[in-house]
Structures are given as C-alpha cells and as structure tokens.
Image (tube, rainbow, N blue to C red):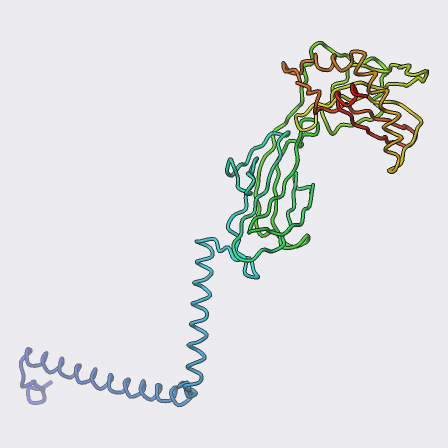
Length: 340
C-alpha cells in the first residue's frame, strides 16, 4: 500500500482505550434500559392478570377470628400437656387417682401412693374430685384380664373401691392396673399401675393337729383360716348319735370362733331358728363340757394362743346337710350354755 492510501489514526493509544471504554459503557446502559422496559412490561402483564387481592372488612374480620381461635386452641393444648388438664365434664375436676393399702375413716390414704402389695393385702383405689359428685366406673385388671368391675358415685368428692386379698385367698402375683372410666365400656380416663407379690399362708400349730387320712371337710370353706383338731367322731347325747365332721377354730377378721360341724340329714328353713337352736344346744354343751373348748384355747398358732372370752365369744354349731349342700349355723356364748 502506498503511503498516500494509508490510514493513520489521529489519536494515540491512550485516547483509543478511553473511547473504547466509553462506547462499552454506553452499550451497557442501553441494554439495561431495554431489559428494564421488558421487565416492567412483564410485571404490568402479571398485575393485570391477578384478581383483586384486597379483602373486604367482613372477610378480614372472619380471617382474624379464625387465626385467633387457632392460636387459642393451640394454647389450651399446650397448657393441657404441661399442666395435665384435669377437667372431666359436668362440672367435675379429677384431683387425683391412686392406689394404696390403707385408708382412714375420712377416705384419705394413710400410707400415701403405693405400687407394690403382698397378696394377702387389700388394694384400695382412691378417687378425689372437686366440683359436683358424679358416677364413675372402676375396672381392675390382672395381666390384662378383667378381674372385677365396680360402679359407684363420689360422696363428698371421694370414691373408694378395693380389691380384696386375704390370708386364705391371696391375690395372685403379677402386674395389675386399675382404670377409672365414665362408664363400663368407655375408655379409661385415668390408669394406676401396681404389682402384687406372691403370698403363701403358713400355719404352725402347736401341738400338731394332723388331718387323718381319708378325712373330708364337708363344708369345704376356704374363705377363712381354719384349724381343725377333732375329726370324724360320734357323740352320743341323750340317746341320740351325732356324727361330728370337725371341731375347729375358725378365724374371722382376727377373731376366733369355736366351731362344731355336724353331719346331719336334718334340714332347716329360714323360719326354723327356734327348732335349730333346740337341736344344737345339747351339742354345744357337749363340746363345752367335754374338754373340746379348753383344747381349742390351748392351741398356739404361729406362736400365739387365741384368747377366748366366755362372755362374748361364740360357740357355733353348724348343722350341715350334704345332700342339700348347705347348713344352718347356730351361735351361743359359753356363758349362755352354762346358764342353761
């Protein structure tokens, strides 16, 4: 190329760089303006397509009510979870529900809350409420098997139910629970858990009174502690022979009874008390006058002799009819017999 045709820029390198940067800045500014216009147009289209989002005063009021109610319900649930809400219904509040081994005459737990019992002990379920007295159902379970159902009404805001254990009929060992419910088939409102330990009655009778081989206790009564000491005898009284099945001590609520069980074919009705007493009196006198009563007083059971009281203790004659499966019991006091 000839020198005439050459193009020579009339700016130096620094000036060229500044011009280039200025051109790029103007280009970026133009692009931003275009993009901004497009974005605003898009927002305008979206706003045009949206429904009117403003709520009326009536709608706003109901919405606030709904939100406030939800917050209140949540608060109640939290309080119930933290404070164990005790409202039962019908103006009744459950204050406590527990099991214990002893209550006083006012229905208060003497030893407080218990969860382990021996088989010979009674187990008391104690409900304490406030408000109006109301009916409740108590369900007792042993290893998930329903044992007993009791229905009662609180009196002065207390209800006591119990499961009975005794020396001769102890509660079986294992895990128990007692449920408090509104009705027999309703869900449990409260549940108390406890354990019963095995109990076995051991009687050390001195002197020993072994039961003869082949002897049968015709009463077969296992509700009380019995200590028989005379078996299968025949007493001849006024030319009459009486078959004596057993002569024994029977313990009822820590009180001893002197009992003579007679195997007889006689039958007595509810209106035959005078006749039964006439039949039983000579039998009671025979037992008293021939040393059986003194023998009963001499026995020691687990190191303790029972102190019979001749003025108040009972001599019981049971006239038992095996065919009828029952008997008629007649009671006397030792003094009563001696006076006749």
